[in-house]
Length: 485
Ligand code: HEM
Image (cartoon, rainbow, N blue to C red; front, side):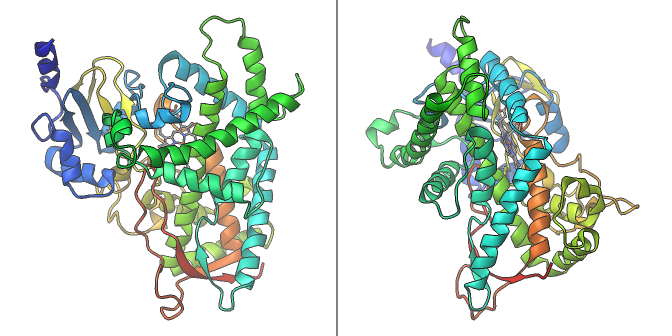
């Protein structure tokens, strides 16, 4: 037994290079970086694009180049997920949902979720109308806030949260929140806290779960449960309400479709469909879909404040092409500079800097290196978007780099913001459509700029994100000017 454990501590032949020792994983912490993506990149500068790390019997690899990332993400032996103690607290320790499951359960649930999110709108023109309705509300609210300020200086904090949550929530449960609804504010703040509990790497609580009994406060357990409980009980209430009010054969939304499936699956042995799974899937759609989209939009405002000439150019293009009408998805090809700017925002404002960890389900290889079964694989998307070999002068904000000689915006295959392969993001179409419609509409109706230094003495716009599982823009004050449309 002891020999077997000692063998597990050994780096196998062919394992990727990296710092030595059975605690080499801690080298990431030693980089003194709040962003795990940056810590990985620093180690990569020393050891190469694929690094191997060890934490006692656990093995990790960090992938920080595009080529190695494509190799890893296309490998069907690397589709597993680690058993995340923290994450599974949302389902009372059960392994459920889509984000952190694998095997047959994950395959069936992912397929069901993709298919039925389409049934309730994704990719349909009705959803485009619904997104535009949310945008109209947002614009009208923002105009009111600007009007109520004497000098147009307002706080930019979660500007897009309600609208983005509403789009998801309508598909899932046919309900929407009014702006300022305290329930919505509570849910959004819990999701924000949940996403900031870890920076993407394993937490002490997930490595040593027993800490929750010994030091529940210090280990963060109490804090984490404080985020999870309100989201969970809200989703539970919503499912119970659907059970009471649903009419068989006329599903209203994703919850009704799932409840229908539960009826169908009652007699199937080993079915992966159950009520806990429904709760977890809704939870996953929220955590994966709301902060990612709303934070990308939050970053879009900051980049425009920092690059006023680019903002003007975007607005000129929108004014010329749309002539005051609302944008539609059909306008995409007609607004190449706007699209290129949005793409550049996503390159530098990469909200999911590292993919959710993958796990080797069998012994396999990546870029010729040996990856033993159960190795946890981190793919550093931030490093790809900042690689000087792919993007000359990567720190510069240059929308032009996405335009071809004919002035058309070229959809960048070089960026992997939504990941790739069988575990790629299931909300990519919804997110891309939302980002385009929101960004175009907001630029059409408002101009954003730095406030005068004397107007506010703190919280000036900053591009330094708040670390977490997703990166968040820092709340700040800005001068917002209504544009005549
Ligand atoms: C700007 C917006 C978004 C970005 C940048 C983004 C990015 C990502 C990334 C990087 C992953 C990890 C893939 C991997 O592990 O290899 C992921 C997974 C996922 N995303 Fe998104 N996402 C966005 C929006 C959404 C939306 C709107 C939804 C809602 C439907 C969503 C649902 C999911 C789900 C359920 C997964 C897990 C897929 C799986 O494990 O099989 N995402 N996303």
